[in-house]
Amino acid sequence: MNRQAPVLLLLLLTAFSHSLIFAQELSDGKRMYQAYCSGCHGLSGKGDGPAAKTLPVKPADHTRIEMNQYTDQYLIEIISKGGVGVGRSAQMPAWGAVLKEPQVKEIVAYVRALSNGKKETAQASGAQSK
Image 1 (cartoon, one colour):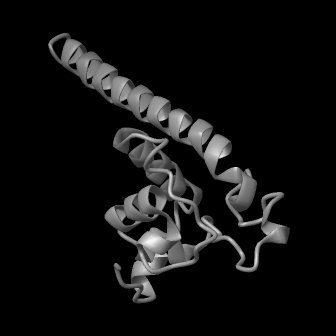
Image 2: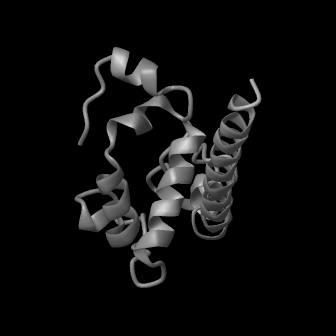
């Protein structure tokens, strides 16, 4: 048992450090989401931000299971190029000139976290990747 203790400790420390890194990325993603996305999508991602009422098209609800049908690459493109860049609403601005790709990926990770726990149901319901 004495031999296993250092190995177990190393495994726990490794798992903990990975959790901290993920938490840091998520918090950076959340911070940027709140700064750049929440005006339209809302702080909780439900598409109910203060500007949403003035838009002709309701912003996407990032908490819905349907978000899981979109690939990370698609979400990166719509954030970077805006709605027009991917054939969607012109109301979605392009953030590619403001945000670097790693920042966009952090936002995508946060958007994924908003609908966390719903992915299995999305796959079971036959949602397709776009």
